Image (cartoon, rainbow, N blue to C red; front, top):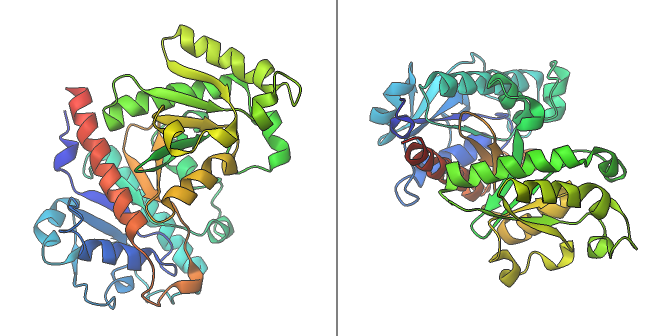
Length: 335
């Protein structure tokens, strides 16, 4: 059995023209106070050499990261090019980000990296170089041999975990995509992840209704009765602790959050608005259902502030910390 907890974490550089290099470097600077496990970044070393007060060290293999980590930011150099210009997205920077992501997944799958943390990418730039996935989540799941529908996106902070059961689609299309099998798949993935990644033996799952007041007994919509309740009933028969569809407007205050470990939400903003209201600076995106641990900061490339040394690293730090929590709990689970 691979001792994942002993392996350094791989951080893909994201788009180097964004804030990825800066928040990675700032995370390294706070490694001691934040209690971060050793990690290395995959990308172009030129993008890290001129960051303030952060020495870098080129490594050839992940196993060299541990020895280097105390003195310098270890960089697995995989892209020969001049440093990206902060704030100026380019096809070359997109190529670097994709190459780094590919290698990070491979190293985690081979056991050379304990987890993957992905810095933000520009999907619009990736699409220009032939990227055919909605986002990094789908790319990572395919590289891990997991069907897209079985890789579930969870957003998490210290007081709330949410899963948008439909993600990057128009609101008008949610009713078409929200199906009983989808709800069942998301709930199963959530329950398993709470046990494997967070050590919660009997996870409590809350389900948000699609319509106002969870449909008001069918008076404000039938999706809760026609689509959602059958899924809940089946999941209860399987032994899951799961609620009936609840009104979304009463699920996220402090007392309500204390009653569940993870919330399933029918659409993107229903999940992300409360998460980002509570944990805008320390929210983490974690992909559930994978054989590896993958997390990322819950924000984008922020090209508009790249290169100004004002990017906040807390979400990246939280992503590294959450990866460490998941890896440690998986070790316990496997034993």
